[in-house]
Image (cartoon, rainbow, N blue to C red; front, top):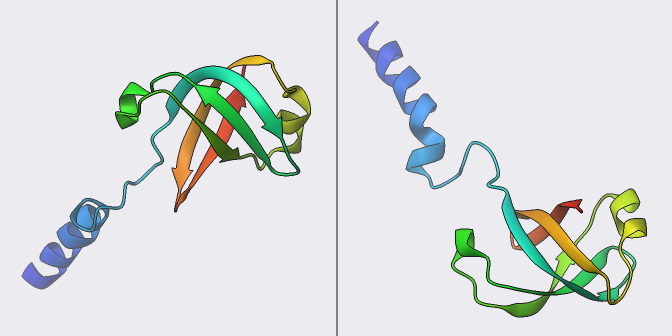
Length: 94
């Protein structure tokens, strides 16, 4: 019984213990679209405080084709994104 309790507790905290969040953190940015490709968009964005990022231009992955169709070169966007592995994926655009 004691073993089952300890095992349950370990499984409950394992994402924390191994540095894996239980859900992706949503980050927000504001910038200008500089390039639109098939499944990526480059954005010249301002600082992203949640990641301690300075202003820069970088490519983001976009998995939702409807979002891709809403973004045009030289368009100012407010966007949200999450980290998936080594990629940063845009999840919303305003």
